[in-house]
Amino acid sequence: MAVVMDPIESINPIKDSTLAMMQAAQARNFEVSVIELNGLYVQENELWLHNQRVEFRTGADPWYDIISTQHQQADQFDIILMRKEPPFDMDFVYATYLLEFAVRAGIPVLNNPGSIRDCNEKLFALQFPPRTPENVVSADPEVLKQFHDKHRDVIFKPLDGMGGSSIFRVKENDSNRNVILETLTDLGQIQIMAQKFIPEISQGDTRILLINGEPVPYGLARIPAAGETRGNLAAGGSGIGRPLTDRDRWICDQVGPALVEKGLYFVGIDVIGDYLTEINVTCPTCIRELDKAFDLDIAGDYLDFIETHLGSRH
Picture 1 (tube, rainbow, N blue to C red):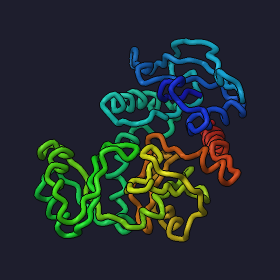
Picture 2: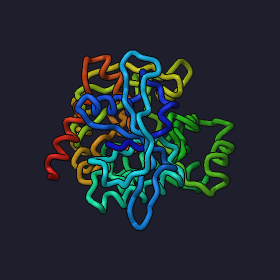
Picture 3: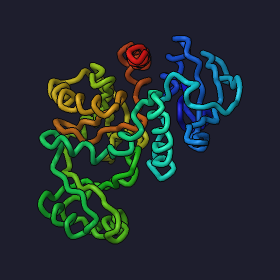
Picture 4: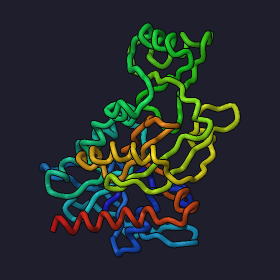
């Protein structure tokens, strides 16, 4: 198994979801190798990986060993996991193009790199309109102001943000509205999203994980810190596990088949109140938090799916 990810030395071993997947793979006797984006390259129309073979140790420091470093063709691996964290910049985009060389060679890449590239995490949610809050996407400050004038309490956010960065709540008569829009749109050059504020954010922005289109039966409600409107853990929110509601399951039923069709087999959707707000396809997290709260083994469940998926191809 090859895993495209951030530098392994930079991750938090206690919280990292990608590490949970790699440890589950090692427990199933997969050999695990890690690759950074700059370790992907194409030579004579074949994808090559400059990778490090690693092994993990429980309760030890250091918690991993680098066994070897080598250049290998992608067909030396049974499967490639794309688990690079955003930002979704041009290096990320180029990596998805390179990984498609592996897909064309018949090597499973999860999630499908073309679908990762196509499914912007904020815009993709808009393909399910009865389930999303009222919104507008535009670079035109006047269009965005009209939406704000109509709804009076609005969230403005970039389309390529992560971890709650650069998200603004603008209430009625907010004197900072113009400068916020000028900054986010770069004076009308960059598309952003405006979304009607959902008061239920006070009860949490719930992350729901789906494996092969089926939801884990519990979600992580990320509660904003005092004085905040962002529930993201990276923005200081606190996570509380809870069972899925009927509405959560209904949303998953609507979204799940489209994810499977696109080869998006491990996905995190974000739900506030009754509304779907984002579909995270690049590197969804919260495995560790949900495992701890409910004695689950989400990474193990994903590896069970991967083994079944690989078996069906042979």
